[in-house]
Image 1: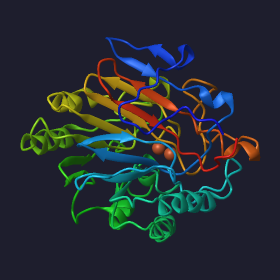
Image 2 (image 1 turned 90 degrees about the horizontal axis):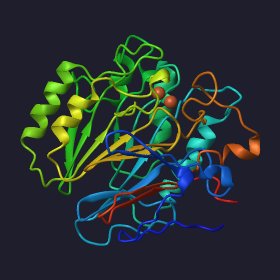
Image 3 (image 1 turned 180 degrees about the horizontal axis):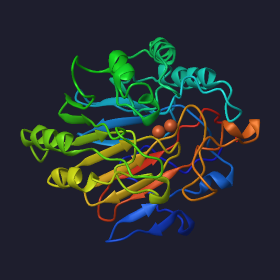
Length: 336
Ligand SMILES: [Fe+2]
Ligand SMILES: [Fe+2]
């Protein structure tokens, strides 16, 4: 399989004209359409991140990544939208695809420090789905998995069932922060009171907590924010965005490096805005249509031999004047 990505932090790859569309206010939206080219791809696995010199970057194909070489370096993995309990034709075997993804993570030469799960752990929030997901995810050879809920985890008595199994602390509301090797991680919840086709919200209480949480963090500290629904508006008619995320981002603007990781849309899309880089992730369960393609979001049935390839787009962020390269390729099926 031909590859154009490279793990070198100093190398940048310009997006093709078809990959790039100008956003507003100087932002640049990069949506890779290279899936159509047929290489890379599919549904599942996690995204491998490496933190080198404190700056996170995604480094592509799991299993091939060589990261963390200095004492302070570390890697982590993002897994999203496992939808345990889903069994429709878009993927009747979400357990099988999750297991394939986890096998890739477990095969990493550099074991990740932890895994982030960015929500939709379950499909219908049933206690047995949470229990099955918890048991399955224990097959990951990592010390810790940090969770934030997706809207599919809030269908039964709000977040009660989810928090019972996955909350980082008793009595919390699901948002939290932690530090790892000089990087500040913040998990946010934007799936409460979600209405169909309406943008998500963080809410004032959480925003106040975030402002307070960040007060003690130096501007030079890299920050990684993770939440289920994108913290930028990917496609408003489908509710793919967070209405009050601007407030959250305003608290983050003083930091030199902010990486925002989301799930929910089951495909990789990235955006760069100043020092803030946004990345959505693939699902391990089923693909969804590209923003605005088709009448509505939802599980997308594809030919069986395409399932493993559909979502493996390569998204490339290029920030002129900066050496940052962020590219993401995490296909379960790495055959062409
Ligand atoms: Fe999902
Ligand atoms: Fe979701």
